[in-house]
Length: 287
Image 1 (cartoon, one colour):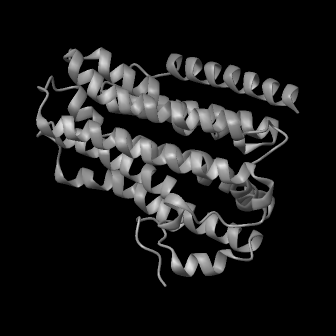
Image 2 (tube, one colour; image 1 turned 90 degrees about the vertical axis):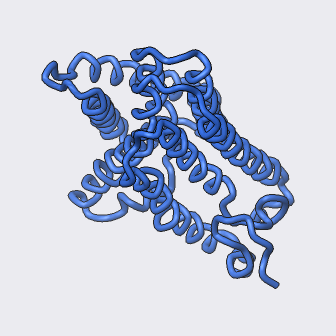
């Protein structure tokens, strides 16, 4: 198992490195807009990862893309333009912390290519044409576009040579705190699961007493934190509120319901827990 896991992770690193490099080489010179160039790179890399997942017959190859792909994008924006060191630190630190946290989760939980995320299996559990459509668009391209949209507010704070202000400081602290919330929730769940006495039981203690998905709440708040960073530039248009709101919709209408449905099937006490406990917000349980 350990050997297979290590081999899978090394293969994943190789495929990602190759995908990022080839995607960068293929960028069209006609793409003069910085964000258009980033979006094309993002999509090219996703398509190459998709090809890899088809060849390996496992869509979980895409899993770390959510946290890995934003790093070169953010670093490129931060260092391609002239910004103060303090501004770069305020923007980069919470985002890198977020990426490390998610990637660490993947390294711990992913068992290798012999395992595939149950959500991907469900999406592909249909006829061949629809399964491949879901694989390409639902599992790969759609999440990439949502992440790309979520990162868009950074364009305003990293490319306009703005000064550090109180809103940016608050946004950086807010974003960092959101990742702390995710991390604490994950560690609480991990500690619960390693206890064999808890097999088949629902985690309903600590943060999980007040929210069925406190880790997802932290993830959503992280993206709203990025929006606040962009807002600190004073240049961002009103319509950009859709950037973090699209992420909110993804979790409220897709990720949370899918996790709830799976838990209802696997845990006899989950239905009662679900009735009493908020989906996302940390609220006192209903009596």
